[in-house]
Image (cartoon, rainbow, N blue to C red; front, side, top):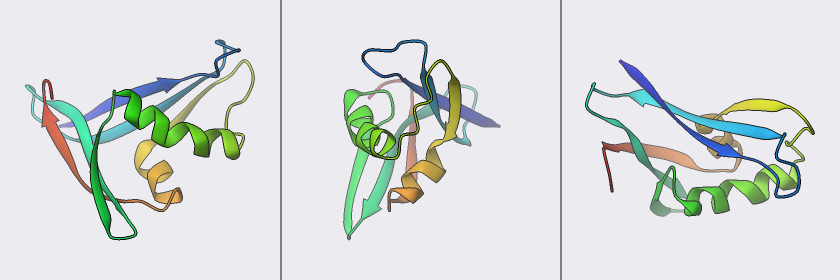
Amino acid sequence: MNYTTSLFLSPENEKTTVISVDFTDKCTDAEFNLAVTIKKDDIEKTVNILNPAMSGLLLPYIQEHEIFVPHNQIVIDGRELLSKMGYEIISFKKGLDW
């Protein structure tokens, strides 16, 4: 079964604008996508999807490319977004907590 973990982001000054970054991967009933291991420039790191580190990774790119649309809710595939940012997804860490 596929399971989606969603990270919701919005600009500091405009909370009616929301981007949902969805990370979908196969999971069992007792799991969800907890973290993703990514690689860029031969550097590999694991980032918890729902921790501030992931927001810090994604927000500069989202802001630079003006993806936020005022008063709209946008859904973005997390795999595609990381790929556009130059990252290769190595694996997902499954679980209930980190």
